[in-house]
Figure 1 (cartoon, one colour):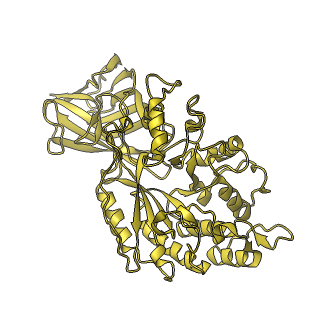
Figure 2 (cartoon, helix red, strand yellow):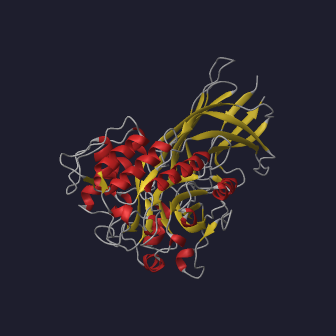
Figure 3 (tube, helix red, strand yellow):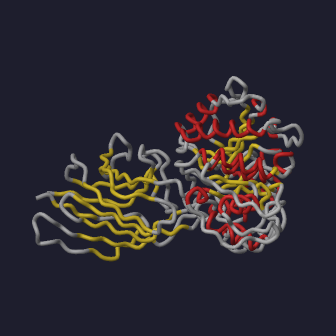
Length: 502
């Protein structure tokens, strides 16, 4: 009978206890528990989080674009101390469709190629579409004259996005106004006639009965509500976070389409997102510029952030850091919105200044480094067990702590893969035997428990064992924030050693 001894060791693990052999020749039961003392101070780069670099991509009438690939991003100013030598995964795609605003439909073949290339490079992207030429902040003559053209374009955009959810961290609702931030221009600001509002929504969602107050002849933010419903309707069946510029837009949408009690002057009562509203979230391009985040919070900052908690606890949140409101004294403004991503290119002066300020709410880190270390999710293995359940089966149990501000976005579900590499050999695909493990990993998990069958071909000897948390095709792996755990070649976390002997 082949005997399998599980040693589950890492350089910083402490072995607490071990079980005993079963008397049954066919079934063994050994359990090895250990305590993992601390996390690494290392910056961890994972998909769907962190600092991003922004790329403006211009779409021509024939579908061609100015670039079909984006190099892996790095910090902009190499001489600045806050750069370190870091690179990161996330790209912000600002899609300029100004050249197509008079076309009845969009040709997005060039963007299709770009997203495919990003996926091949295992990069992730936040994406926004707008009619603002070159994203220069134009305030007049931006959108098409006919609102129905915008709705046609949204249909074309959603067809594209549904093909590329693997690469997309979130869709930012743009289309209107300078930088696509949904303000200033006529469709963003003017009210929509009631009859137009009702008939347009009916054409999008026939079963929807929008809430109209008695005596209303125009609907404030009506065009924005319609655009939100158009996107959500066209993306139905696709799990993709849908972010808008202000919580006020969410309130108005929920009032009209979900009958939420909202009078426009007070923060509405609590709301539990469900169905398509579960996708809703915020992108904040005025982050920490003032008490109201430079036009983000229009009623009451604290109450609005509390209202948004059921949305931001599972959707990505971030944007552009305009100032350092309260950051010097507290990290609350990072945690209470579950910060996931920020633009490394704006505002450089603020970011450099934060790298000079000590974060008095943490140890030996500048505020910038603290943000860099905790933005998004940051999972640390704190306790672990490997249990042999039979001569050929093993169970992995890991307890996790998330030290990040946010969770893995709700639309990401990861699978488990286990690699075995003979001790002393290079950990590579060539030298590894692999096994698929049961279960899946999603945001909000505090533990992992997975069973797998030992792969055939394991000869006697000691094998390092690696756990890979990734998409079904092996891409977009997640790294734990523990020292000496990550193997860059396998894109997997080393979790121990097993000894196989006759």
